[in-house]
Image 1 (tube, rainbow over the protein chains, first blue to last red):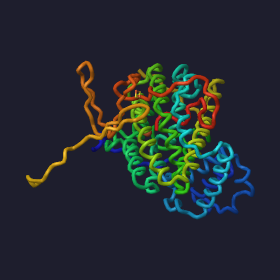
Image 2: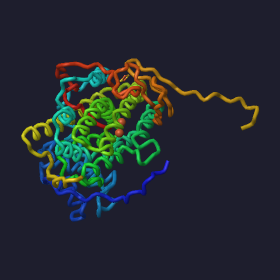
Image 3: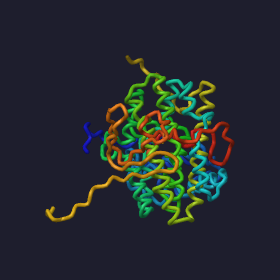
Image 4: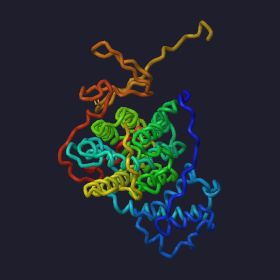
Length: 346
Length: 86
Ligand code: FES
Ligand SMILES: [Fe+2]
Ligand SMILES: [Fe+2]
């Protein structure tokens, strides 16, 4: 099906501002100021001493990964496979992975992990619960800004895993991805619905526009998907990440729809989450029965990685929720760059 | 198609699940009890069997077991647990 609207021009995002020595080194290389950083050129100890979840490391990693998606304006496409950048990326990944490995419980019981995701805690205190009952419009807009780094490339990180699967698991994963990409209709692509929501909320819907505004905790969630997507070895982790997202999305999307109705948002804003209530109720079933079951039957040794993917993405989502809820409780912004005031419309 | 070629009927696949909806493959038309028709063009539609969905006849995962006081356990934290549009 063809889009009813004319295609938008494809623009690569602008480079962000650095947040420390690691992101400075990566950005200097991307700007062509320095040759791509070789491990030896990073200040000694900078990688090892970096906070694995911190602003500097997560931004550096995000920029390395972005070369594999859309790149950056004015940055040579050749740098995607630059050995210096790839070498640094590997070091950053190892720090990030080691921290995640140390911070989750681990295990191999995929059924127990999934079972825990399938019960609905009625008294939970998450971002969507807060937004539903007491959220204010500025908080909803901040949430959308932070999440835009993922949703404007929604389903892209998971697409990396397709060639690493085979048989029924591959087929079921592709049906989910096909739905994420609008089932043949560009106007129904989930990334497009997210962009429409941003526009309706008075935000800039350009890909990567809010990279400078996003916190490391938001970038870390996207980085985890890119990490697992780009490494075949971590394909089980990617599936764990995907199952976590798909299984928990429907009820949370329902709360966000209610939040937006309460705040008086229009239908074009609400559609993204409304679509996800129904779509992810289906995706849950396809991932559980169509992907996980045949994948583990064919490659039972992946159970540990699937569990890791579930636990790590849950940990990162909780860190993100903690940040938002604690800042909002103090009436503070969660963004690194505050948004301009919403001009009064209507 | 040659006229003598036997034609296989086109069968819709309907999959039952043990804990929730019925999964119907292909675009569908559902006739509701009031005679109105609802269409779904999804590749797979999850039809609610528990009657609890706020979007009945479409499943919205309201069939899930609801629990109070979730105890901290590995992944099942009380937060959003990764979800919100995927
Ligand atoms: S079967 Fe899922 S909400 Fe009823
Ligand atoms: Fe989904
Ligand atoms: Fe989606």
